[in-house]
Length: 415
Image: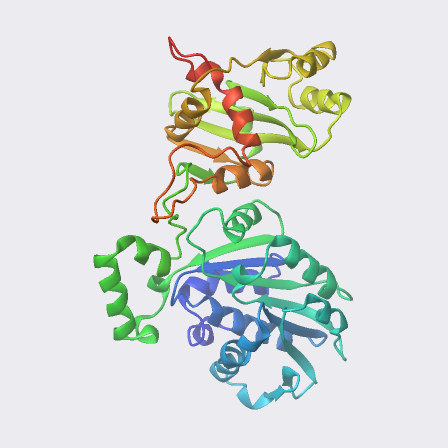
């Protein structure tokens, strides 16, 4: 579509994304936005364009609950066909629910994923399913479910386009917020964020804009979440100073104050080895390396550490496992036992909380990103939170505390 035609169906905030899709810049497009951002409208337009542009292409539009498709996605796709001026070329069928591009017989299938096994029988009569759209992607159970569906549908063709549209949930720990942050670090993936301020005002109407301004004035946090699509948090998050982003090789090349830590794990608990640069001047940590594994053997652990730490710099390790630490020392690792003591957990977590920033590369350190973003206080019965930090899902946090022990040490308090 030319820019003049594009302006009739897409907001300016989606022009660049449209060009990326047209030029096949990526396979996966994560489209996050608040209320009225235009992301679902843009996705519906792009799905129809993909099918009409490629004679062997078909589409699949998915929601977690099938009963919501007819009232939501079908109407959105029919609007897109009308906006593109091709409504007479698309026929809606209701059993099963699908749109048919009548000149060629290509289809867009609309399916619920209440039972993912039903998708295994989904086949295109002509061509293959090139385009997939997950609407309200945050309603799905997690990245494993999306991968499973993609593995089922992404067959029989060379090029695919997959859209994930969602309103970011309030908690940064929600799986889709973490997944979007991790996706931004991958090749073949584009993460696009939008909000209503990038939409033409006449498309939204005065009532919508007035309601947004009212909420902005009365409840700015709710406004930031609902209209700007920000993961503002639930109030119980322990680490509100997190940034999940790629740490580039050239940035890592300048690291000169690397802290390394080990948390031993047995049985159900994992072994964790972390490496992070401590920027003392700016009081921030940049976590760039993670080895996280259940039932890891000493030889494997030593190889992993030696590969990341070829200069044999000190590694601070949990002192409760002296025999395990000795095993690593025998293999050439300079293990230094961390000095644990009363109040060490609370002080260590508080020290991490008070850093200006904790940067985590979610592609290199997915478990650390998951743990720190998901670590929150336990709720009480009155809607508040219990005192004290919970002792659960904190193996990376413990390794990070040990790694930074020397930086956080204070006179009169052992760690």
